[in-house]
Image (cartoon, rainbow, N blue to C red):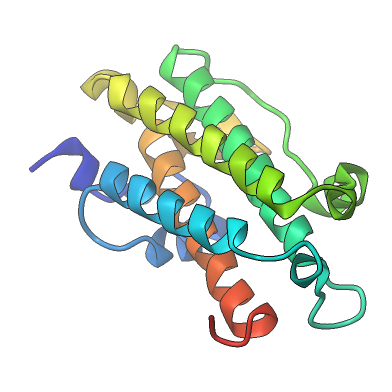
Length: 176
């Protein structure tokens, strides 16, 4: 069995992230990241800037803010994976998406540019993950006070994206 098809085990992540890992389908996680990244890019870049300003309720993020949150999370989780793969166990700080999102000024940007930024971050992470060896894949560290393995972070990225794309389709884009 390929290292890329084995889901992370208990102890490789905090239980908070179990739902994200469950959202990632079985199979090769790198293939999933590549396929889903392409699908997400097509979905987001196909929206008008006007549609991407939509919020499904007062106080909720806009589509642009959700998209830029995905790019932020892609970078943060990728940096954690890089750090731990290089035998630096942390501890790394957390990030507060609710504090970061208003500071991103996403609504002042073009959705096409945000989609491209997310796609670039995904491509960088795919190349990184493809280059780690078996030992690095299982290395662990601490971020936000929680344990993570490099492998778990790849699965979390995929599940986090799946979660937000599902919410976008159900609540923002009327089942698109």
